[in-house]
Image (tube, rainbow, N blue to C red; front, side, top):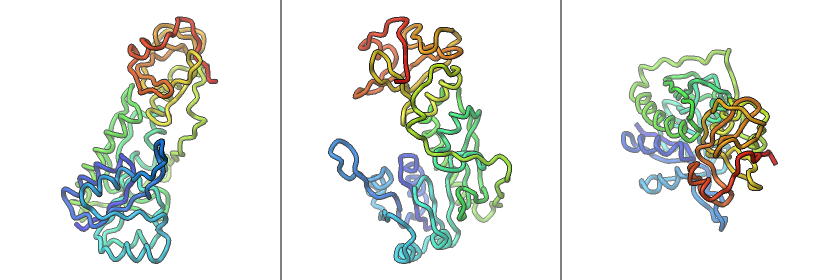
Length: 302
């Protein structure tokens, strides 16, 4: 098929690669380059960088609302548009342009976790499973009927990065199947019950309150890893905690019990990956070799 691809971050790249291998990608739409790094030079999105490597035409309008942009989109003559983590609202004129409509790859089991941060929210909420839905897009926020769905279990130590990578691959595989079977798929309206919204992650959610139960802190660490990264103050430094597991021991909230095992309001978490400011992430043993942390030290929120 003639496909327009619309996506921006790393999550979208495997989908672009799969479509390029099996269909004619006539154009790639993504977010504009933005200042990044120490020099604050404009950096293209991962999708733009990969599309250019593949020799595909790229457009990155700041908005899709102007008649000129909409006319350019319609002139591509696409049979279908595939949208995954694009970052712009699609006006009705864009939704109507492809002959077979616009298909969205969404990283949740709709109608649960519509919106911006479904992977983070699934872990933070303690969900046992998540998945990928291929959705027929309409004007509402992730409200369209579902064409295809696949589930995956959320493991006890899964982080956002783990699920991100797994779901990205699932999305790439499912969209190929959906396009191949498009004539035979029956759109299933989303139920009205069970709707939840995955709000963007706020920086204020990242500071750890050690008086909370270990189960909640465990989900906070995994649900914010690698970005923005749950943090605490250890030995006078702010440290990001990136991987952990639950430990059935007790102590005063925030007390360092052994190595990087830290007591919570009830139970404890054992930190297995941490990152000091200005340093790379380190496994527990390597982290402790360069960071003295006596037993009985306190982790604090400020």
